[in-house]
Amino acid sequence: MAEPSERRTDGGGMCGAIRYEAVGEPMVVAHCHCDSCRRHTGAPLVTLVSFEASQVRFTEGSRKIYASSPGVGRAFCGDCGTTLTWESEQRGQSLIEFHIGTLDEPDALPPSLQVFHGERLAWFDTADCLPRYREGRHGTDPYRHTPAELAGLG
Ligand SMILES: [Zn+2]
Image (cartoon, rainbow, N blue to C red):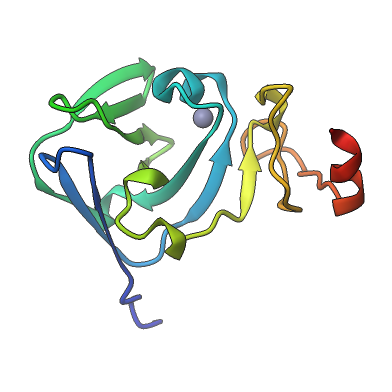
């Protein structure tokens, strides 16, 4: 069996009432362009760091969870309003995904792909060649833009 990862990811909201830690490697770090993430945060897209719920511990405070759709909750700090998570218990898997801006060291975990690219705002894209999935990352093949294509997108 592989040695467990020593990585530790700490984070929390703006006011500090809610703090969390996650132990081990995240499953994926992804930009999400879906309409629900946009609505929850008010931002044109979000970047989420995905962990198994068993890797995560909330060390301070208790988050408020808004049930945004069946099996999906979106958490925030009830004091300062910081958007904290996307959470799901579906298909026997329990996931907690943190909005990357709540990490203490977001630079440590760069994204590797983009999901729900088909729902992105028409005026927004990122200048990278990461694989882009029209919807979620399961079930369909991603597509990529080359730098030259990206230059032509504007
Ligand atoms: Zn989303």
